[in-house]
Image (cartoon, rainbow, N blue to C red; front, side, top):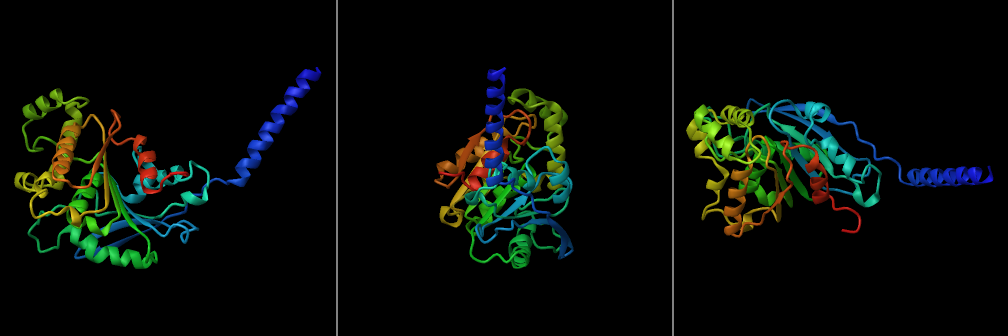
Length: 308
């Protein structure tokens, strides 16, 4: 009986020590976002702003671009992929740590489907990327009192593709940029069903239904065959693009998922690296498109863990 009570007391001591440790490092709270819309040149931008109470400890700012469909708020509440809220759980490993105070995060989109390429719709509206960089960034940065920190940008899926365009055209404005499982396809989305099926069957991890889904999304984003073919990111890697105009650090996280995006991503990275452009590729081996396996890698890239 004495042995039983000794073990019980020992267990209680362990639990008390664990509780004391947790009290010393309280759970990281997720700030309630401020969500709103801005209309510029007839284009509606939806955004959610997350400001940590200790903003002065980490003055940096992250622009986050979600995947196809929905709004920033819907992605945070309903998505199975990477969202702005997910990042907060990893900054500090679920527990608040002073050196892991998150940056201010602005999750922003221009509707369910959009792009930052050079494609001009011809309707007299400036390029979406120019609206974002020249007009929305100054407005939003005034709103969050961003002055002396570093800018980051990251996107997932469609947002990852847009992170690549941002890196190629406005990269020097950002210290770090990341593209998670970007929606680059190594076959025209305007290919017929037989060609899409053949591509899916010859691409590791891809499924016919997955390739068809991403092809339809890309046709929505790029409404003509020429608008897609003339604005492949690899075409932007030319003699007029200098590595000195890009961000200091750019990481692409890729997988071999059901959408068949891996081959185009690998080709883009190889071409960029052959031209001495500053980027790296991290392959996760994940077989489901843009799942949370990417969240911790992105969180650590933007705000390195303790001791790093």
